[in-house]
Length: 374
Image: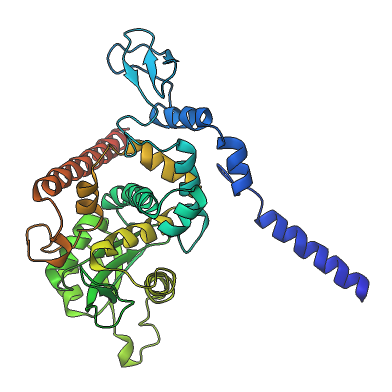
């Protein structure tokens, strides 16, 4: 018997070792430091993300570059155009070493509960304010990507929830600070998720949320809430289910309900110990992005998002990642989300995102037309 238990234990240890084996860009912190422990390695990786087919100068088309001596910049050997590994990206003009950005990205992606700004500051040896700004940039990359997310597949589950948040000036951790129930809309499929803070859960909010984040023609599973009945029949194959209060065993929406009650609320209340309205959308973007990229290499995807999106100032990031109620938020200056947002920057960034979305839709339509002709 002892011999068989020993074999079982050895097999169990073997399975655990196989499950914990390094995958993707870095499996653990030691491997990350070994691979990206120098600034040169990080710069070369970022340049490779920006030009996956090899460097090509945007001015002259030359394909060779050299490092500028004594500076964190490179120059095209053809025309002399100078650039850095982060110029034009979301982390452009950073004075921090790229090794710290890579370490912070690994911390955010490696922990399913997410990393706090204090933990990033402690691990990277920077101030708490710098840790907050690093985390804001990383969440901004996720937020820009999730602004263009379309949930589709064989099925899509849609539901709303209410989460307790502190007001714009207070914190839910302290009594008397002022609490409010913020509506949240979620759409979940087997591989994708979209989550948005909403001003309300009316038919207009649900319809606009679906138009932005749910692929047309997909079968949408939802309950019989009046807003769902009014909003969905316009372009989706709505499959209503009776409310759980009616005692119908088939009424549950297992994936979206599990995501809301067991994962989202556990993160906001348990891990984050409460969030304010101004930061709710940033947490929703991080939650939805990590769900949508859970089957791949999250750190590689996050670094790709940092290289993909152009540089944005902090007010622009707050406007995109912390001010996305789908119904009335962008135009209502009295709404608590918008109290500290620059209107001009918000409008410019939203217009830029709409242009990006239109380009994605046009490219997909052209691809479908080509396949049809073939």
